[in-house]
Amino acid sequence: MQEYKLFINGEWVSSGTGETFNDVNPATLEPIGKFHKATEDDVKHAVDSAEDAFDSWSSTPAPKRAMILYKTARILEEQKEQLARLMTQEMGKVLKEARGDVQEAIDITYYAAGEGRRLFGETTPSELPDKFCMTVRRPIGVIGMITPWNFPIAIPSWKIMPALVAGNTIVLKPASDTPLLSVELVKILTQAGLPAGVLNLVMGSGSTVGSAIVCNKKLRLISFTGSLETGKWILGEASKDMRRVSLELGGKNPIIVMDDAKLDLAVDGVVWGAFGTTGQRCTAASRVIVHEKILPEFKRKLIERTKKLRLGNGLDDGVDVGPLVNESQLKKVAKYVDIGKEEGATLALGGNAVKPLPGYFFEPTIFTEVAPGMRIAQEEIFGPVVSLISTSGLDDAIRIANSVEYGLSSSIYTENMKNAFRAIEKIEAGITYINASTIGAEVHLPFGGVKSTGNGTREAGTTAIEEFTEIKAVYFDYSGKLQKAQIDVE
Ligand code: NDP
Image (cartoon, rainbow, N blue to C red):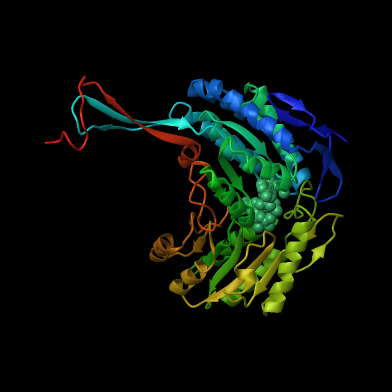
């Protein structure tokens, strides 16, 4: 089995103990590779290397840093198919979606590279004569990044590329279920000319490697995507030393289907949003709030369409739904199905683990007669389970949509402009789609949410640079005399 080492200070190195962990294909349970398990000392070494590299990297002109990203994007394009296949084997998502994941990495890399010739500050008049005012962007410093398994190359790229172009150096810890795509990404960035120490890769469990990153005071920002529970802990730890944290923590995303909606379009959107990536997206549609007038017909059509989905190995043509990523996700989904039944919801379709292959497959599952307060309608399941909730009208639907602790994505299907604009105004979420599903964010728009979905930061889009830069206000006084703001104004 192939062995993959840590990447510290520009070299592939064994972990301090030489210990490794295995990564398996969740569809077939075949091993993918052996990965070195970093120790706390390895993490410290990685952080020190990133700190040493900071001065030179942050002093490199941003357009020159960007040239490395342009080259990276071109290599990613050349290797797209190969990377997508590795991803399907490592994480299970079907090949078409894996290609989309790599494409997202390509898109954000080009987008961030463009920032090399922008990184805009502002100029503004001074209240005093012969004085010039402006803002400049500075890198934050050494950044710790902790990423999940559901977008194995897109999420690391969303964080790494803008951070690099802004002049930061990085220590990355990918999820233990998907380290391979991060290894490949680091190889590509190195091939494109990234200097030693600028990006360091440490692998191993969240509880040891992840927490060693979070607790290292040299890291001025921890950028994290994952569960609410881990995010809360990270926020608490980092804030003890006034270090910055950026959190993206999931959702319980609603689709509202009004009685004037195009039903088949809405059904397509729900099937894609609920069962794409086997429901393992933070933007997955897990609640469908349907107008009572059309609920029976919508339910019938949704069940009919969902029955046609084919489970299997994501590498095989014609497969729509791959496995869950690991056994604990499988158990979590099965537990929520039991909870739904106990709560009195009707299990209208699915509900079982199945074995088209030895891996972690779960049937696309639909609950009907779900009350908004039930746990299956409140908590993030992160699997192929969707709840249908009846509504009497738009205000009631929006109230239900907002009745959860998360606020990431949302959607409304309606042909009525007033309904659409009301939804845009009133739904508490970072993203609202009109007549499209809850998934499918594009890299040039801000991504993130409100309430417990995060701590207010946004990734990608124009905000990508904000996450990874500090703003400095500059006052340039060329009057040659002492001038006092607020005082010398008369
Ligand atoms: P976690 O939050 O546990 O894991 C996400 C990342 O954080 C992984 O790299 C993990 O490492 C790391 N990590 C775990 N514990 C710590 C810690 N104490 N300190 C620092 N890093 C840590 O999520 P899971 O993968 O366990 O998934 C659980 C649930 O989280 C899902 O069911 C889903 O609800 C939600 N989730 C949300 C995602 C999103 O996109 N918002 C993505 C993934 C999960 P390791 O892999 O080694 O455990």
